Amino acid sequence: MKAIAIFNNKGGVGKTTFCANLATHFAMKHNKRVLVLDLDPQANITHYMLGDEAASEVIAPYYDREILKKENTIVDAFDNYEMGESTINTNVKPIYCDRFQASIIAGNPFLASYEDILSKKWNELSDPDSVSGMRISNWINTLLNTEKDNYDYVLIDLSPSLGAINRTALLASDYFISPMSCDIFSLVAIKNIKQWFDKWVPYYNSKHQVFKVEKSHIWERIKDEIKSEVTVDKGFLGYTIQSYISRKHADGTIRTTQSYQTIIDNFEPEVNKNLSVFRKPEITELSELNLGEIPHMFGILALSQFVGAPIANLKSTDGMAGSQYTQAKNYIKAFDTISDRIIQNLGDA
Image 1 (cartoon, helix red, strand yellow):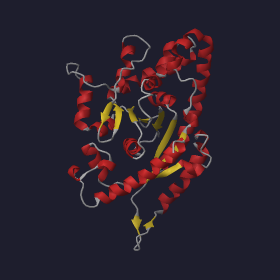
Image 2: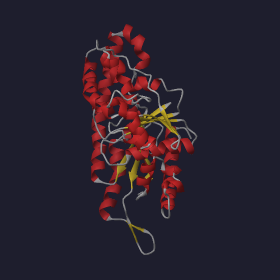
Image 3: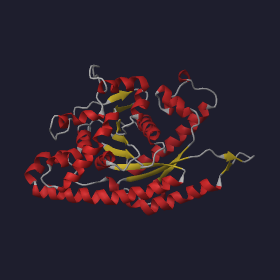
Image 4: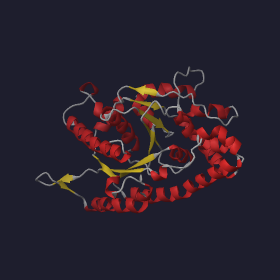
């Protein structure tokens, strides 16, 4: 199973929509078994893939303990920690989402309360005697190991943050993809990602080596739970750009706004300068990091979210009508290209 984080510390770039629809394309077009992991405390992808009513029912027992809990969410991984243990509860069952043809480990707003705990445990890595720090920092890695034979890919939906939750998610990831929006702030985010990686990746690798040497008898017992080395810093698969609403000339050709075109022209050099160093080594041509453009979806995204179905699986019974079929066709075509390029960059073509 390959773990792919959908990551950008800038918000509003369409990460959640991208993640959910990519899962469907992997399943439908490429016949892959896909798991989605919701690590955004807003739990948006959980509501998207399960539908608002079902998602609310899954999360409700965490607000009212008198409601019978029928499904797991991501915070159940910390059940043992709440009992004073450092082991991760791996009995967290995914939920299958029929219309997306993929499974999800549901998110939970209470995940936000673990941000400070994860930050504290990360700092404890400086203490070679802190088994708890090493275990808790690897909580996602431990959780995903239990599912490694059940899925081909796990897509991890993250919040726009450079915080502790996202750091542990990227620690557990093999690869990452960065959706971008067509604005100056996405260009800034590219630089932030590099600076952040440069700080925490060598920190973890060095602390793990110290732990392995000084606590060798413990390491032998828990090594299957622990990421032996960060790999996501050699796993950048590429980026997508969300298109903007453009105007057309009388002959139908697109008329590009100069300010937007300036930003677009800067994406490739900024990615090459800051993120290409993290690319998967087999990606030799930097142009291959440009995975494609996400077309503007106008009102079809709202319909997709409202009915809890991916754009590739919307039907007339969902309320599809008129020009929405053309919009969906364009989106599906774009995602076919993007998913093909990701599969190629993964080496799974």
